Length: 231
Image (cartoon, rainbow, N blue to C red; front, side):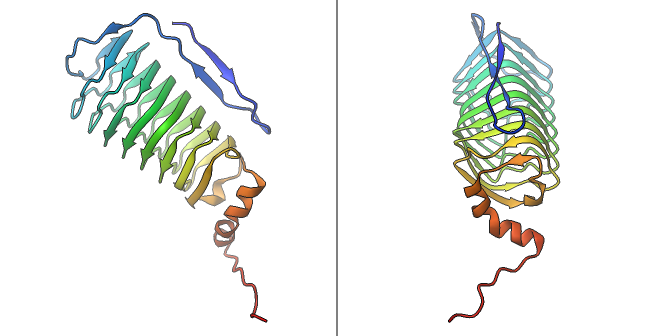
C-alpha cells in the first residue's frame, strides 16, 4: 500500500490533510463471521452481511468494504487503517472508542452510529447520509466531511482540529463543550447548530453564515432582539 496525505487550502489556519488510500491487490473475504480481536489484512468484503456480529477489537488494514450491512454490528475498540468503505449501511453500528486512520468512507447510509470516544485521523467522509452520529468525546484531526448529510450529529465534548465541512449539510449539530481548532465551516451547504454555538471559537464561518446564525448567537448571549413598536 502506498499512501500520501494531501492538504487543501483552508484560508485561515491550516487546512485538513486528506487521506489518499491506494490499496494493494486484495484477497476476497471467505465469508466467515467477524471475530472479536480479529486481524483482517488486505481483504475485500463485498456485499457482506455483518448484522449483529461481534468484531470488537478487530483490526482492518488495507481493506475494502463495499455494500456491507452493519446493523447492530459490534466494532467497539476496532482499528480501521488505510481502508476504503463504500456504500456501507446500517443502524446502531457500535464503533465506540475505535480508531480510524487514513480511511475513506464513501456514500454511507448509517443511523445511530456510535463513535463516542473514537479517534479519527486523516479521514474523508464523502457523500451519503448519517443520522444521529455520536461523536461525543471523540478526537478528530484532519477530517473532511464532503457532500454528505449529517442529521443531528453530536460533537459534545469532542476535540476537532483541522476539520473541514465541504458542500455538506449539518442539521441540528450539537457542539456542547466541544473544542475547535482550525475548523472550516465556510463551505458547508447548510449550517444549523442546535446547541453549543458558544463553542465556535477556533472555527471560521462565512459572512452569510454569520447572518443565518445571528438569532442563535443572540439567544446564547441572552440578547432579546426587538424591532420596536409598529409604525
